[in-house]
Length: 390
Ligand code: PLP
Image (cartoon, rainbow, N blue to C red; front, side, top):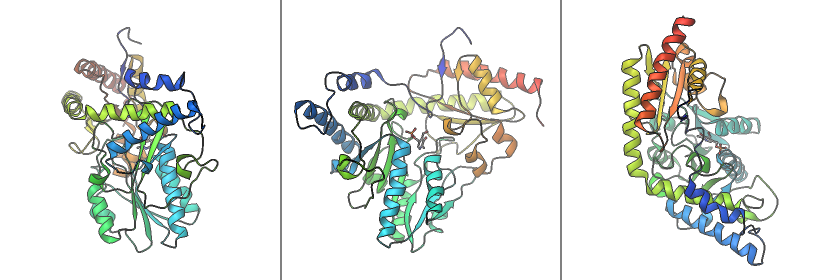
């Protein structure tokens, strides 16, 4: 590995815990250790921390009722809780059994949908083209009288494409306002607004470790009118919707992290967009046989997903890793496998295998980007000369 500083460019996989977030969490990992359900003052302290966090998150969502915020163990659980909890509740009401999602969702959604299909639900997958955008007009064609749920991610974790969520909500609600619309917004905090009324959704998933908060804690926002059957049974925590002693320090950290990224969103978005565009321009002009995957404009300010003809993405990743530069070949959860997202978009199979994802974060500088492009140029050239792929 290079002796210079390590460069982390895999922020869609996870982000470092911010020191201010750690500072907010520490009292709840030490003196304020009480169980938030206990009736004595130790319990009160913990409960106050959790109530404050719930109000802060509700405030960012712009929802008047903090009880619409359900704390979970992360994005995966929030997605599972929504799809299974609301799916079974609406089916039990006799409203239908049909769920619409897209072909490029995270496995927390797609694998849950596969499981639901084995359990009596019908699932439709809206396809995407090379842009990686789920078009509202395409989705509209799948709506049926028995549709109960539509779930489309706010931004894709591999190619960073930003989805037209409010347009999708309008298309769905004008067909049937009872359909519950959910968005997996795990990749968007700090980059896109999270106002529930602006988005128009009934439910939204977040995960703290994607926005400089701790791992193992997330949120499901769920509009109060939306029925839910809890999936984890036990005590009456989270208003009888998600049992289990609450991770108070994690919850306090999640709220602090969300407040922090929200308060600095405009400046950070502008800076990161500039950095991302500089990265994209350098790669596309300086590395022959390279392409950017996904829409050029409608993408997260942090995401650049490239393919390089004649090289394996995995080999590039390893070459950069030896130089102290961390990138990925796609989602951390699917590493080692060909990207199903790029395949669903219709990217040429040879280019799918030659893809890497670079995801910037707030601590990255232009120097980090320039050092990375120089190393990438070298790596691609060397790999092509050692084992040219046809
Ligand atoms: N949804 C998306 C879009 C993600 O990117 C991720 C994590 O990579 C998840 C869900 C799962 O979140 P967690 O890691 O908190 O379970």
